[in-house]
Length: 59
Image (cartoon, rainbow, N blue to C red; front, side, top):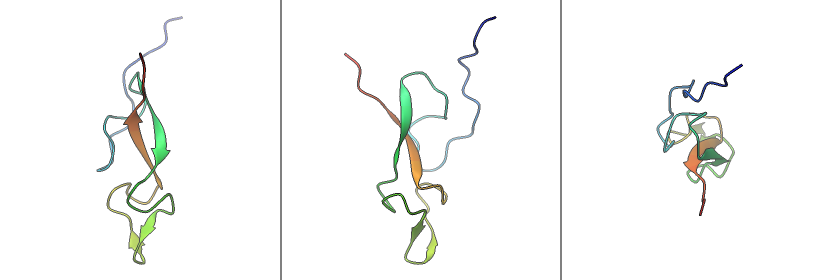
């Protein structure tokens, strides 16, 4: 069975790439520091998840 490397989720505003993109991983949102809210409202950077997808270091 071949594993699909096609990203499956639509990126949120703070994401560098869609979830599932090879070479990426989840990180704490820099806008809300992982809470999902900013000044009592849904964080616009992570859309309220508290996480963003970022490229990870590699060689």
